Image (tube, rainbow, N blue to C red; front, side, top):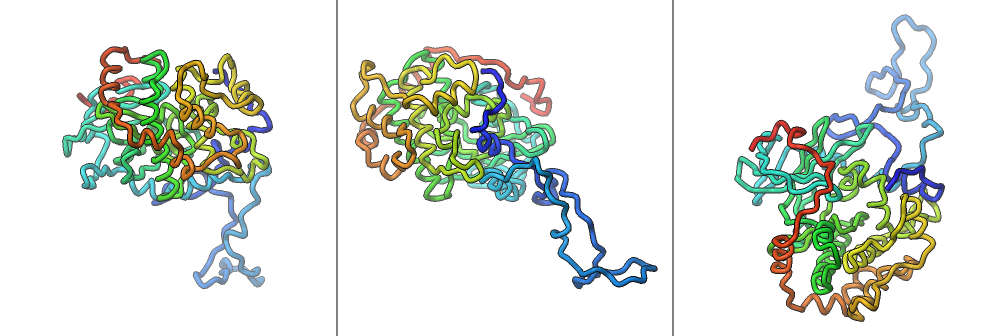
Length: 406
């Protein structure tokens, strides 16, 4: 899809992705040039000291932060997501350079990772299979390029005790790249859809839905987190039949730079209340925005097609999300009534009427697939064996990673 200049209703949305610069950072790391200030010489006791040879009395002492020049008028108010990025930065910078694998924390460098080959690139990002030399563990490492202005990406390497969330082992941040070490999975739901070139069976999507709703519910209840980026490329499966959600928080979206922050590949899954908030400076959305994203993802995977077709620009997609009726599962495709009802509930356009996780967990569709035996592992292995890997190109080449050796 082509690039576009954001229309007025995207002001709040784009402000969230590209927050205004500010100063500060953990462990002496400067994120951006600090605001220009007029310094005072201080004797440490709160009184200004006269420069040598000065006769007139000193002006009244004022706190340093009161002497900062006013912010330029072109800077928009900082968004909730911008503030959260800064709040997480101290934790992130303390974690970089360490890997926690097998219950042990190891100090590590990039050279401690042996490259075993590329897992995938494109919509799922650039992901490499690597061996941690100190332990022999084989892991996945997602590689991204920082955004301009030294604002990101800053991955939030949070470790979870939830079986439905991909474990993050740690991060490395350099001047040119960001590396997120994570649990090795098979592939993402988006690539499975491309491999199959058609719909994913309802029974598989039933198990997938149970896992994702429980993962989102865990993030909200245990960590107070709204995921904000639920889509097929962030839903991972493996040959053991496990289904897990990638959680890199806000910064995870930034890792893929333009692919995630500027294209409708991300925005197309956004709920209407996020695209066009009543007050862009005070976004009025909660976890139900992720419920909408889940609904769009299920329609795409169940039908084999993204629901908003024939759009040439991001603007067209976003306009359709706002102006058209929500997509539904086509009755002619033979989906169960419970599945159709579940998707219809997720895609309730008025977010105030859209169910939250506790209500979704009581839905007949969830209840059925919580207990129904489904051999996801055999289905997954069969698909991987009988289909070819989609190659989208544009990924990082082996030459781009000179510090890895086979």
